[in-house]
Amino acid sequence: MSWAGCSAAEAGAPIPAQETPYMSVGLQFESVLIAAQTGAEWAVAVLYRELHPAVLRYLHGQEPREAEDIESETWLDVARGLTRFRGQEADFRRWVFAIARRRLIDFRRQAGRRRTEPAPTDAIAERMPPGDAEAEAMEGMSTQDALAWIAGLPHDQAEVLLLRVVAGFSAQEVATIMGKRPGTVRVLQHRALARLAKDLTREPVTP
Image (cartoon, rainbow, N blue to C red; front, side, top):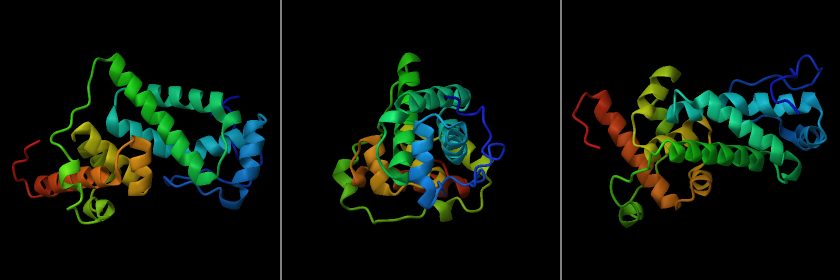
């Protein structure tokens, strides 16, 4: 099974490649998934091409130099587990990004890095407003500039913004993927956006 070796267009698949972070297989997802699980190259290509841009951007925002290698390992894991996957289109997206996150964590462990939390978040999570302002806050930035800026954030803050903005997940879905409480995700989101606001006004920023 090859994720990149077969073009959906060449195989006559009805679904074109997408450049957005959201899957759009829609009502055809079940039949595409079944075909991919039985080894149909066109179906494998559809699933890969639907999610590849968003997965790569997510990883590039976290580890720019290693993103392509980590993504390759991600899709190898997806290929190994594809026949065991059960769920709908949204479940598949969460599953793929959860695998990408595990591979990212594995890479950082092997590199001797450790995630850090700038301050306890649970204590203030309940006082946070709901907020859903990532897209508006970053609206005036190009994709390249946004990814470069996100890469400079603490790992948890960067990951929240990448999963929310690049992958298009809800705060609840991000919490599930990261293994955190929704309130904690909201706090990390707020801190990242507050830092962005300060950066845009060229005020000094403290980690």
